[in-house]
Image 1 (cartoon, each protein chain N blue to C red):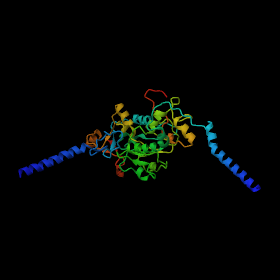
Image 2: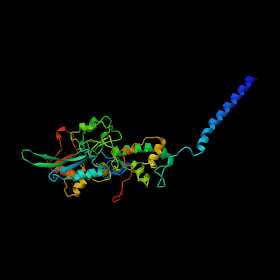
Image 3: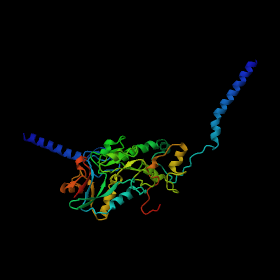
Length: 132
Length: 248
């Protein structure tokens, strides 16, 4: 009898722990305790591809385009880094970098190194006559 | 008999006409038998039929004038970092003097865009490469900054960047730790424009530099090269540079 009671108690505790473990993510994410990247998108409208594709595949697109541009001289703007910067640069800072910058905010959040801008300009070309 | 002969003629005529037509006709999207030099659509790759080159008339190049050097620096975002010994140098003016006659020459020297570039031969990663149209470039995505190309180049045309760079021209990405050199303003050529140095020289009225397609018999540069004697620097190395000098 005694042994059976202990067994039932252990089972009940195990079930409770399992339930807690299952509920934990729901509890954690229900409130906005997890920080999300703050992205200022100044120019609303459609990107060159839909959002899901862009989020997942933009590194591959850029890599593909860079081969075409550097080696074959194809300078179409749709998938070029220059095109990204021209559209996505913040109107406040003029750049895709910075805390709320389109590129940097997300890369900081995902902890993915962003080394494009060691060489590439992070600001679009100023129109002739415009002041920085 | 006569009917047969006519038949043969008409067949031959037909073949000749169809061959002539086919040359200009689009075989498949983007593939033509006859490539028209210079008239490239933005989504078409560079053509092997083109060989870009420069002709520098040394009799028109003034000593002390550095319009081309300044234009290059502005276009490509090359700034003085206060370290003149190690600053990147894509184009420089060289003053030559014949000690016997006292005759002087002043010429701009930049990457000579060789047909057989030694920088490409020695590059361990394939970053240094020659584009189909003869322009020698560095793919900075692959460059590891080993500087073999700088040692291999007989024209001292390559530099390496030692400082972090900001505020680049969006068309000319350049950064710390990469080898670089004159690109013949490839970003301008791809849009049908002339290199910045040539444009500046012409604008200032010197007309000492001509840019064009050496393979196109109709181009000014090809006609000038065919008509007047021009030399390549260190022609003994048989690298066949695309940059030629007249009156040197």
